[in-house]
Image (cartoon, rainbow, N blue to C red; front, top):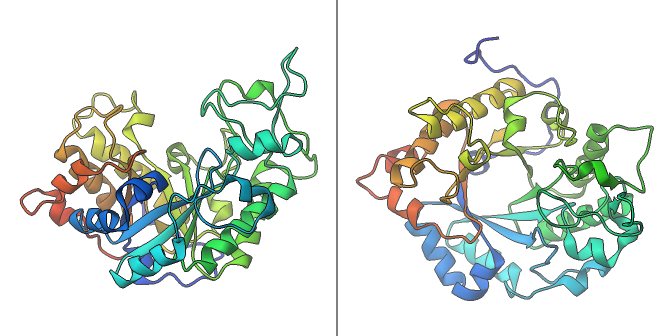
Amino acid sequence: MSLWAAPRALTQAAPDAITREVRQSHGLYVTAPFVRDQGVDAMVEMLRNSRMDTAVLDLKDAAGHVNYDTHIPELEAHETGWQGDVAAIVTRLHAEHFRAVARIVCFNDRLTANEHPDRAIMDARPHHEGEVWTSWGTGTEWLDPWDTRNHDMIVELAREAAALGFDEVQLDYIRFPVDDGTPYATYPHERSDVDRRHLLLGVLERVDEAIDVPLGVDVFGIQAYWAGDSSGLGQDLELWAQHVDVYTPMLYMNAMREWRRDDERRAQHLVQYGVHRLRDRLGRRPVIRPFLQAFEQGADEFDEDFIADQLRGARFGGADGYLFWHPGSVFSIVRRAMGLHHPAHWLHTFPVHGE
């Protein structure tokens, strides 16, 4: 099939309404330490100066920290208090005409895995019996995706996010680990009657039923390029479309350093082709809102044009909106790129697809 073939329609659509605001959303990832150190006023100013309309806030991060007042017993000890009154932050964002997205990291969870090893992936190496397995990729411990207690926790996190007033729930690390250390990983609760794809589909179905706001997922950038689940992540994006409203492929040049090295518009085309292939597979209804790279590591040239090239790729590939990722929420390069005299300024608002 040609790369530029018309998108196919979904055979089954998710029930949640996808508004124009959801579809055209463009925003920044804001860490809890940023809110703690800089304050909510600084966050609002950063969003406004970058010409964004959405903040992605960490409710539960990749270490297992919980950045709000949770009522989930096994997570209460992990509360940081870094963001203070999260419901008040969401109210402030809405008053300033911004959207609030709750990011929830699912199975990559150092704190909970070490405190509850009976719910964790375990190490199968000789002389490491009884130890929690550590990913060679993330350097952290993981919860066992087969354990339904971990599913229950994700569902409750999503419920609490919706109750706090968030406009959308975004699940990250909704996958199995895949790195050089996984041959030594064992899953105590693994089942033979269901595969990884359908296991995670069941989690998404439960979350979708539990909340009345759009459900989004962060997915490996490679999953945008290739159909199915050849890597064993458990991420089958076509299968998930019956419950997922928003797909956020992480299309970072840093993760595709050796791809298309002879392409003069590499930053644009890595995003453009990934978004288009995903759009071709999923059809027009789901929102495709990629995470774009706002950090220097792995970029060929880290300047305002790098930001603009990624925006071109997202726009011409058929994305609905976009998000920018920096692990420390430092977005000065994005702010400069969105200045009135730079091409990124006119690229940042996309046509609305799917209506």
